[in-house]
Amino acid sequence: MHDVVGKGTDSTIVIIENGHVTGRKVGDGASQVALEQTLMADAQPPDRLCYLTKTPDGKILKSSTMYIRGKHGRVSAILGINYDISALLMVEGAVRELTAARNDTGTSEPQKIVNVNDLLDELIAQSVALVGKPVALMNKDDKMRAIGFLSQSGAFLVTKSGDKIARYFGISKYTLYSYIEKQEGKNHGQN
Image 1 (tube, helix red, strand yellow):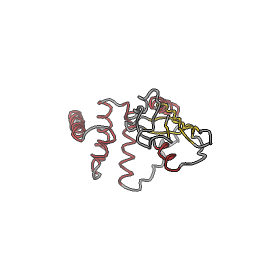
Image 2 (cartoon, helix red, strand yellow):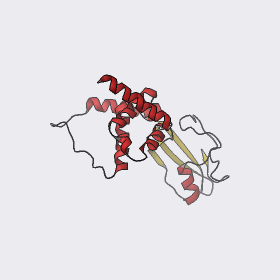
Image 3 (cartoon, rainbow, N blue to C red):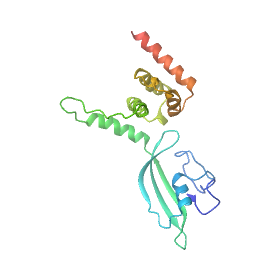
Image 4 (spheres, rainbow, N blue to C red):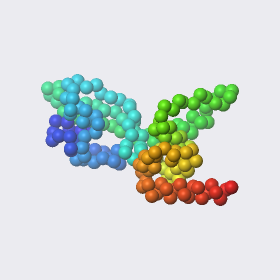
């Protein structure tokens, strides 16, 4: 529950249950929704139900936002409900793989990549799909597998890709490069 008429945007959360879902606690600052309401002071904002958000650590949440109005009809608080669906998305992906029908050639037209950054984003998405779980649920071996795929796919040829990939997987650049070395060692041992 966010108080949007209280003491500003630095400390809007006044009540929270199961803060581990979002990683937030009482006294934390405004979410994007609360910040927008505070800045815009929309007199009649519509409730938003069942939309997706992503936490900084990579969890995918199904979220709903309801605006609570005071006696003059002005929004005084915002109730947010967040449900972690990361594990459900893994199950959905596994079921989709089992039930998907392929066309006769088994291929579909690839998405056109407009620039190198889009290519890097696509390779990162493919590495996560290869592992089959969101980054927030990946262990060390999962991250090593994803980073090995990125290395073999040429992702590290993109300028500053190491920084972006390390940030995405929540690891240091030192750890990133040690994972690459370990994966290359495995690959050389297989030849």
